[in-house]
Length: 246
Image (cartoon, rainbow, N blue to C red):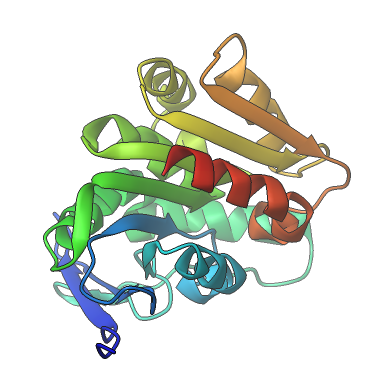
């Protein structure tokens, strides 16, 4: 039996010189095969590890995974002239969260996240044993908005999954409209999920970005959990979606 492939540590420089870090993990099954690849962009203020349960599920399905820390998060905090670190909430209220998020937009450069995703995807597609014609984009919250904006530029995209896509105005006042246009133009299938009472307009975004589009599955679940906090509620549907598109 052939030995399994070892994980690869990713280091990718962004357009403005921030060093992004991530891990490319290969499935243990059928070593030496060419695997589909999922790129995963997490929510603020988490890290790539927040995708842990989904990463395990994707690997079990035979899909390689590349989860990375967004700029200013986790290990992706080295900038061209010093540390680049998100502002974190000072307090326990939604107001404190909102202030920290808004402060991070400019200081960290959240408007560049879609371009960062493209660079990470390009790195992943160039690695051995990756089938660049079968790509998935997965995002949560601000990472989901970035993935939606990046999606039209990924030629091998087969599916796109979002959990509580939010923070779109960080990419510009016209970003919600640009996301709708991007989704309209995709040939890949999409699965957009949110809780019904998501505190960051996740449910409204799902409705606005899926309305009337046959290639988009919209899923709203009870409650107010945000981002990957809804994963276990939609897990079965997500894995069925992945198996269908890949």
